[in-house]
Amino acid sequence: MPIVLEPPLTRSGWASHLPPDEPMQEAPRYMRTKAMSRWHRTRSGIRHGLDGHVSFHFWCGAFVGESKLIGTDDRPDDLPVCGTCEGRAVGAGQDEWNLPGPGLLFEPRRLTPPARCPGSRKERLYQQLYNETGRNLVRCLVCEEIVPGRGYGWRFGSVIHPPGPGLVAGCPFHAWSYLTVLPDGRVACACTDRTPR
Image (tube, rainbow, N blue to C red; front, side, top):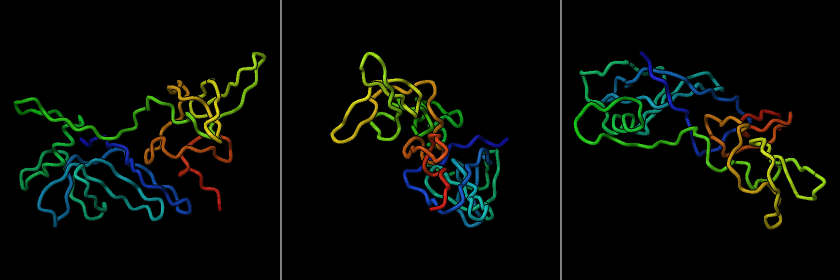
């Protein structure tokens, strides 16, 4: 049975002139190429928008294109398994650890909603509201919460606040790092903006 893959989060930017990539949802648990001396555990996958080819990333940091891969869902016994991949995958909760001892722990970056709203203190990610009390209130466009607005040096934005229930979905590539208001008024990751430049 295939495993559910992690989102392909990255700290790198995006190329707005290229077609968008698509994160893969599932894949075989173990993969390798014919040239590899060990099996690796699959962490994430991407279908590239430019030409449609698929690449998979392993827990140890290596990655390879789909055309060269051999995959299996069961633990292979013909070659060793990459220890870094196995340890990180088990430590992240992808599988159970069945050996005695305290177990393994690895904490990958995931699409877990942040404790602080990503729209906090950000220019352009709020809507100014006016009320009869004279308080300076804004609607955070990222989470839809109504919070006080405040000046930060020469900028203005919402105060730091926890995300509300209307928090926009995180990008599977950049989480909430590059949020922007798109031409249609929605707030989303800037990598989804494919308007011609």
